Length: 189
Image (cartoon, rainbow, N blue to C red):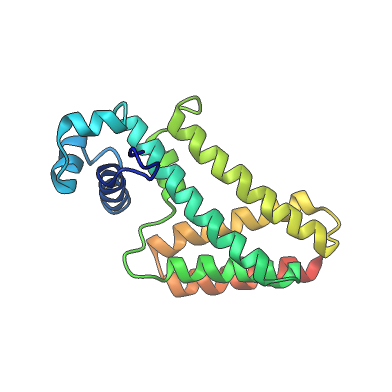
């Protein structure tokens, strides 16, 4: 934070640069020296804002999480019907995986690169996934689903599969499969 209480411009440049590079090239493939160079930030400034690379990676995941939470909050505000909300979540995921430059789920990618469940990075992944599952579980409960937890489990698995399939093969087919799966899940109640 700067003296004004707003996030520092240098910190934002570092985080934006790291986010772009980590997502497009992989976390382990990108060093902090490159992030600093592309963000045009000196080493001392980097270490004023981040303890090291792992702290930067954690901040990247937390920022990504906050962006997703904000989009979900808007959808929750705009959509009263939980079944329509669940289909809208699937549609949003489908649009993401069909978007230009899609390289898979940043959280799945990070978990693959940081498999130690006790690391701060893996914990940031688990925090996001737990929150997302709870959002879906709450929506399924509101639809009257017989087993809201199980329905949320299935939708998360459908989403994960669509994210991977969208990156590895035909994104449109992955999108259509996700939409069909979620519509079937919602209809089954």
